[in-house]
Image (cartoon, rainbow, N blue to C red; front, side, top):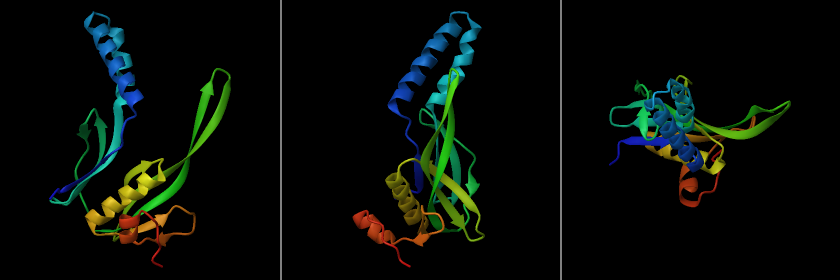
Length: 175
């Protein structure tokens, strides 16, 4: 039996290729004697970086991870008793500037949160894909023997039937 639940967001292939290419070119520049190649290496690290969450069920610990090319970093913390896993919908707005023009881009994101008995929230992950959010929430709820809450509609939070979602990928509410 696997005792660790891992969820690491995937880095798009174009970011991986660009990040690795930039890192290789910068390292070549640095080893050629030009110190200016160090600065763009930070850019390549940002391209290759992703985040996620790991839960070790055997030792009952968790950590928010930052990952670069499969190497995970983060501090392990004790995992409290989880009552339920929620999928929460929100919007994120990013300002984009090109020359003298600017615009705001708004995207829907789904946050997967773990809630403890004292109503403390542990942010497990975020994604832009609703189906991916519910699949991850189901994985975590099953692993932690917790309930699932659909909080994607403001003010209309409903408990989900995990068995129905697991077997048919359809959301059925229990209340």
